[in-house]
Figure 1 (cartoon, rainbow, N blue to C red):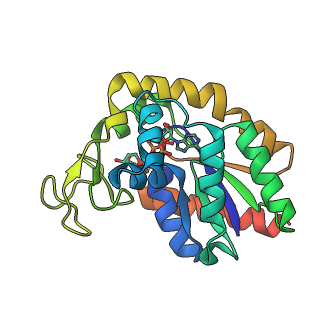
Figure 2: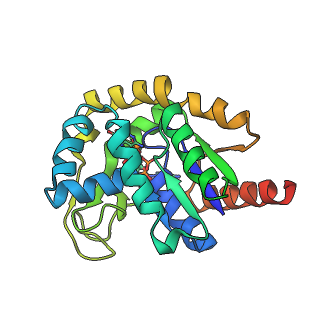
Length: 220
Ligand code: AP5
């Protein structure tokens, strides 16, 4: 399957993507994680991305689309992928459509995670991620690591993302409403959107998501 995951910052996209990708045997492709990997490796792309991410703004389309395309062209993504954080505006969605059409492929579903804003703020405020691998995500109360400040998966140090400050989160939410939400209508016009509530326990949301994706697949 080729799936796009959409939802506000802190909705649980990364958390759900890890389980969904495993269940569906497809790679989880997160543009945020790709940028963070570039930042920790201090590449030129990482330096450029950080200057936008720290302000809560989108990294320019040109570099984002090129990076996403490069990742989607890797052999492990040949028969499907779960995109998390891409596309993030209508021009990225159009670029993705062009990319897929030129290869004779198309998306199967756009999974929209709905969470009220006060919950999103709580989730982001308590989020801690691993320095070794930003896909290892914890929460100080909802998913506390066994040892405070230490990643359960690999023993790495847990830290708070630079863009998780209150001011930057406010900006990220504004960018989500103005630039990212319009892609939901863009994909609704293609009949691809399935919306689920992302409230409740992580595993409950995963079950809800898997059922919604199955219904979408059965409708085809
Ligand atoms: P990105 O990394 O994509 O961030 P985001 O979309 O803002 O989403 P988050 O990672 O903040 O949240 P999430 O939904 O993954 O939630 P999570 O699972 O961690 O992007 C960061 C930046 O990169 C952007 O601002 C932009 O600058 C740049 N960028 C990225 N892609 C781009 C693009 N395409 N174009 C341009 N720029 C781009 O969960 C949050 C917390 O909640 C965790 O602590 C988790 O443990 C907890 N949690 C999760 N689920 C539950 C639950 N059900 N109950 C309780 N707690 C939960």
